[in-house]
Length: 86
Image 1 (cartoon, rainbow, N blue to C red):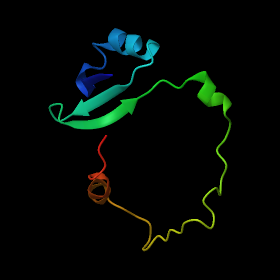
Image 2 (tube, rainbow, N blue to C red):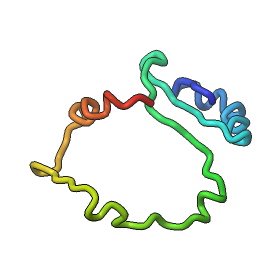
Image 3 (spheres, rainbow, N blue to C red):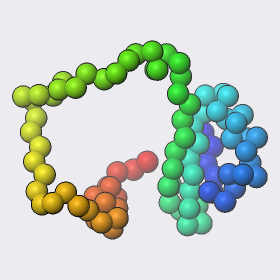
């Protein structure tokens, strides 16, 4: 696993590629390294071969309803995702 600031991505490109070649993950941070804003992972050929996911697998097992016009601000999205730890 490699964690680096967005600003470091270009200067540490060789290290990023080496991490990918070893199957590692890369996390990008912003705001002085306090907030993770991105993640890169290597897609393995085996995962590509599995094919498309089957739609409707949860049909009849769960229900979801969207209230309102479906529009959401960036701040509202941040609030909703804040409990999720990366």
